[in-house]
Image (cartoon, rainbow, N blue to C red; front, side, top):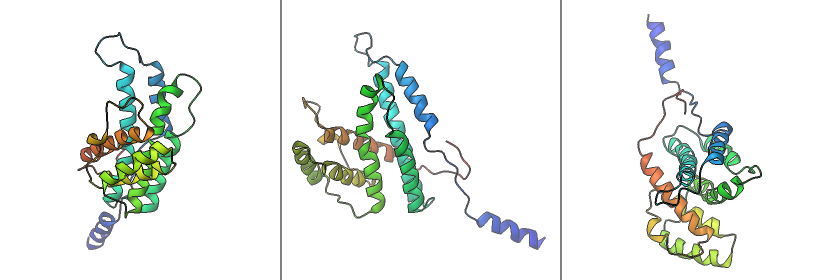
Length: 211
């Protein structure tokens, strides 16, 4: 009996493998199919067209999927290497070329806005990122005006700070901008990331749980 109890104890203490599916090709394809059938025009009334609402949910779904990986890494469920690989796998799906057709104009901008999600996630895992959001936003806007490739690097710093708990970016998002830059779109995505992290505050996973 003692021998059986010892085996049971050892089994309980052994780390259990996680099988959570964060995002896959089928999920991506299903979203694209739904978006291709959605109405983006509406009836001309005040109601937001179905397609616009669906597009936001589509983007939010991806954001949550990636940040769940971050959250579980914070909970020591994954190593750094495993975490980066899982993020890379989602990124490969989300940033893959789109089929020719109307979806390019609809989903293409979402892909561009999500660049900051993946860049910020990696930056957060690397650590030692700048937390001075106000200064970073000012620098990011200046770089965006110049068309600099470094704009994404700055946006990733802001995103990493937000994943780490910093406040951003509602007060920096200007609704009255006539011609918003990609940096402005990234600030909107970072705001979504901040809300997502709050919603995942108590998120964890039991071993063997599926998506």
